[in-house]
Image 1 (cartoon, rainbow, N blue to C red):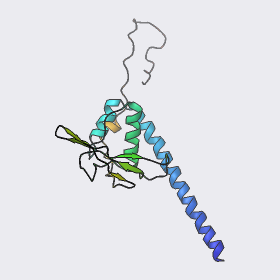
Image 2: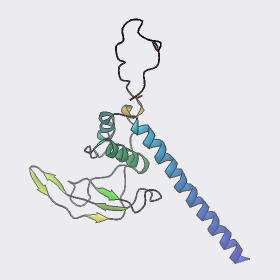
Image 3: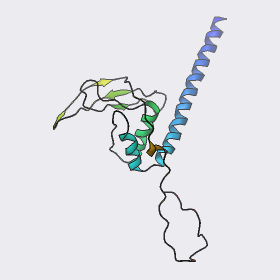
Image 4: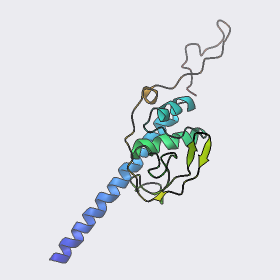
Length: 162
């Protein structure tokens, strides 16, 4: 019957959407683990290499979140209205939004003067993330504490990662 076929098609579409959200959540978790292993300087290097350049301020968690977002959904573009500000985005849900949400521009500096902007949108074209060397580097080990010669049973033990 048509109703059964329509119900089956709706269920298949719903299952596909749920699988896409699960895949997005899995990739987010993997990227978070990968970027969390980097230093704040390496995270900033990753963001600085993107086109257009991305915001570099914030603590390490904010930098990790920004790198994960940009790698998943693309970089945030400059404002199409004023051309000065870097767009900001707010999502209704943590996953399943495909990088689209409420975009706004706070404005930016033109020479020495700050120019406010009131641009708002619900969609934006996001340029792709560019993988850089800093993203693929292994974490730097902290140097081991000096011990006197013959000073313990753990000589040659691995140095824990920071």
